[in-house]
Length: 284
Image (tube, rainbow, N blue to C red; front, side):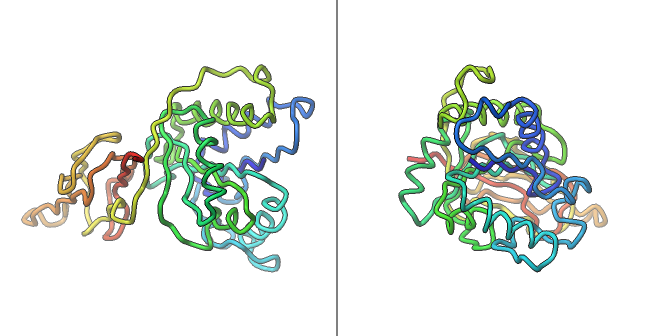
């Protein structure tokens, strides 16, 4: 089992939860191999930035990395060629960082390998958290999920909050859900670390790129909906206001699909092309 946090340095819930597990788990409690790396992109974590201040690179966009490359490329290479090959499952914990706020949820991607997909569903359930999300796109070979796919292992991600802060509910769900998942694998005994009982998980899917809504202009984004709201295609999600031109009509941003708002932009100021919302639908 490989557990990582801090691929993006401004995403804290996973880093805190895995650090707590490092302090709370004794080797005698563990069956099998448990690899915990709370802040795998430590330079970015110490700088509170999404990308590394050492080379400006996004660790989740440079796999399989390069053993002779920049610091971020070397980290990616080490995960791809050392850690992933000796793992069966990779928990890679994220949140919305400084730019997005997510409903706390555990997540995975649909892989080409149906055997991996069949394994992933029960693992999402094992976390016992209210929401689980499946991404049905992001066919991007440079992401961590593609590193997992190349190594034939199950990849479980998350979005446990965001906004550049610490979502207390997301932190609790990340920590307790991880313990439940480790118990379900037999890595830990059920009484090793007491946590609250699991909840029923609602599974959602990001169906295609139209579930991501991007700003059509530059200005201040004024949301009209809250996280968790259910919307219909064509419903207004918010307006973008031009503060330097009071005569300009606000640009209304519309939902392109029916769905649940699982993510909203955090900083009010946006540029054209910034992600301002993400929708997801129930898995049928």
